[in-house]
Length: 143
Length: 330
Image (tube, rainbow over the protein chains, first blue to last red):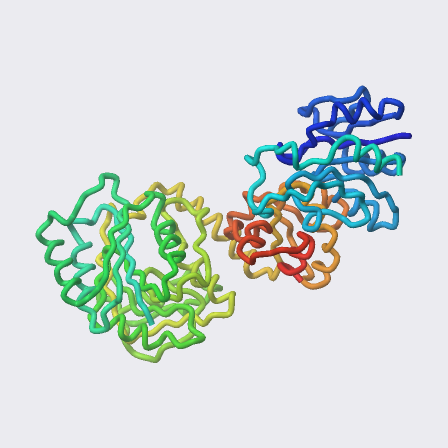
């Protein structure tokens, strides 16, 4: 399976178990998209793609997994709204998928949301227990 | 009607400012409060000055509240902006070298009818020119201002803009803070901006404020380059407010840009021509809309209020962000 991952956002929104998840998915082909400044997690790390290029990578993938960042919105805007169904898995921490997510994705969350959802996220600390376990992600992929 | 008189001052503490404050205190219709924004380089406690002690004593006798605020030294428009956002009702702005006759506030407040956003009277240097010129229309902005002439004939009329000293409803429009510290054109931009929001702007020849203008000093004292800088901003702003274009501001993240883009077609249908000030113009590359930077947008309008997150917090929003955009723009 070809899986596209988009791993980074404000620190509070970054999934704390990426390395473990990637190891558990080692039998699949994983493409990481992101910025040059981000940490490379897999061999196939494509940086600074245009939005069209990202759409093409997603279109040709079997699955995409991201945190609460730009990717679910790009997918919704450039693919889903143009009739191309491409649901993915979004790993939520303290941000609420009800306010920022899309129902057709698999929104994996512990439901432990920050009180002030619309206040500045930049300096909010990551809370590991707000994220689902790697097992939960794997089970969702398997389903 | 609660009226606050505001005076922004620099370099006139011991020249015309006391005269200005006395004239405000001795109004037949007293202001409820007086705020002095002190932009002097050196802070001075005027409470030790006998002249000011007498002025403050008179304020106490008349029950006028007063506040002396040391300003940010960024120009009078910053002080006016501060006053505008202090949850006040109506503000009477007076320059520190202006002496309003004793009936000015009474006449101005009587003319501030519900549909009026700002009203100003004659603000003149002297009585030498007794015949009024100009019409205070925005098209003749470079011509004479009718407030400059000591011509007390005629009735109050509706105009496009006012100058210097006037009475206005607080927090209905913002001051443009991208102007330099000399704040050239700040009153025109403020009052015409009020007019573009549907408020009437009135000139009345029934009251006179003397403008004892000094050759140097004061809060507007500055180099010619600053005036030129402000004039450029003014011209750009004037084009923008008269163009009828809708300015969309996306001073937010990339994902938020995509969320707004999902309602772009509806926004275009509603407003016709739009310009999007944004952080990620590539998102709209193929959408046939003009994009500008946030900095450019700040030259024509205060963009903070457009921030969608700011809007959500102010409106206790508890729904999806796309729905917030719909509420803001559709």
